[in-house]
Length: 357
Image (cartoon, rainbow, N blue to C red; front, side):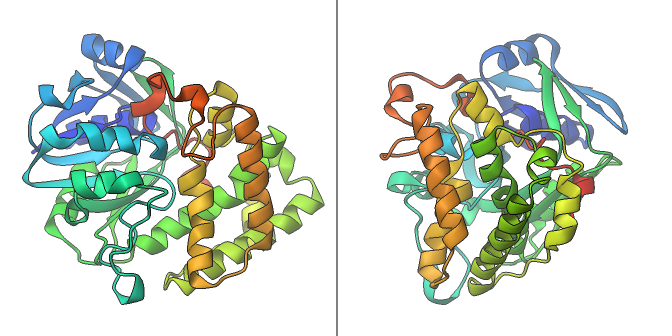
């Protein structure tokens, strides 16, 4: 099975190696030092269940790879317009595209049924670029819990004893294409499940992002330092309640206990990836992780006073750093140059599987 991972950074590189171990014919889209290292030495994953290497075909240009049986998109949300512009050569008539990303996905209302069926999300997908380039019928949702870090180009360290990936069709089908991907990825160090309720999984992960990311951005601190402050603990409980209310209003079920989550945060010394992006001057996932949940709250008629304030402050902080502007994902500071991290995958080292409720 021919599979391309679009965005072979931390998580993307990890998944590429697991796919190769599972017997797939793997290619990757990468950039910069990571691409150079993969071209010479391949990819190496250092995980609790062993050290694994693979030598996928690697390019910055999808035209070099041709049509695939499946594509895994593992970039951060600000890179989606660039993915939409480049992905066409990878798509054959039946190519499935799994989006393993944080936040509300561009296809969220496709296959959802009800009053919002097919509703577009222009903040996530400006100009319907992904909708037109890929098409929601190709999309498979993906949620991953994997503490991965690129320790040097081509080498990825995985902190989890066992990473977790959840795949699901937007319309709730338990499809063969999702099951085939899951089977290729399952390993001692990778637990993969296919769910009929992928939006539940999206919201469960998103609630953790909402209760960790904004505080970290505003303080520059890791969760274990933030959650020693009683005011932050109380605010976190309100954020969780507001987020769960949005999810419930949209027909999703989440099961996160606020007190248990705080105890887990007190053991977390690493910084959320969105704070790492701020510190490194990279495009931040504010729209997918923070703004769009509030858009959905307005759509569903849910009041979110605590989130409203925190998201407003985060936007001001990012704007002051030149990483966010009123017109879109990034400010004019980045508008005239190619962002090297554009095709780098999600770095999910802010949340270990062992910290999940």
